[in-house]
Length: 35
Length: 233
Image 1 (cartoon, chains in turn blue, purple):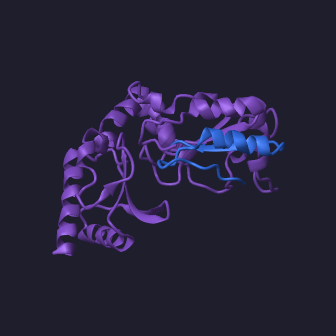
Image 2 (cartoon, chains in turn red, brown):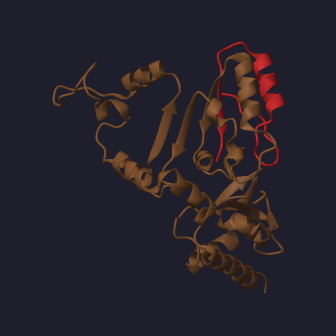
């Protein structure tokens, strides 16, 4: 499991998410918290 | 993303990234997904409809008994797989099986349970979409209607932009934060929990009871002011 960095308000940083995708080729599940 | 703030990173952005790579997008929408019921607030969760699965709590917005929640899967075929993962079989009970009427045993991770679904259904049936939406713009939004009231004391700092029902704030140091919170809770005027955010202690005030009103919020604010005054005197 990888924790994608977030900004100061705990919002996922999408460019870092894309970096994580680029770093691996395994199937991925994104879990985004909305509340 | 937090439901308490108009997001700079939207769920649409995350859904775009997921679509580019074929990743499965799951949204844990404990509080926030219910905002979709409100025309005034659904922009906060725009893009959530593009997810593959969702989980959200009903014991929060719907005020049904604690530990009630919902899980939804987009692909119909996977619902059958989930059924297989959650069901439990034994010789004693009589179960319907494939092609038979829906058996609740196949759809819950616990074999013996009280009827949580009944309370959830009753709440949704009685409220309807309008009722849920009204709830979002009513009691649940009491902090968001008076965002300038936060933080509750000048020595505190607010850590989020107060939009809906949640406020996250802290005092100058961890010891003070915990001490003030303890005083407020011990006063019996309001209850909320402590948490850790960015490695430091914080106080999380979350309004989720349908009976909470602006007067209750004012009373909580006063409790904080009294707690701080008592401490620093």
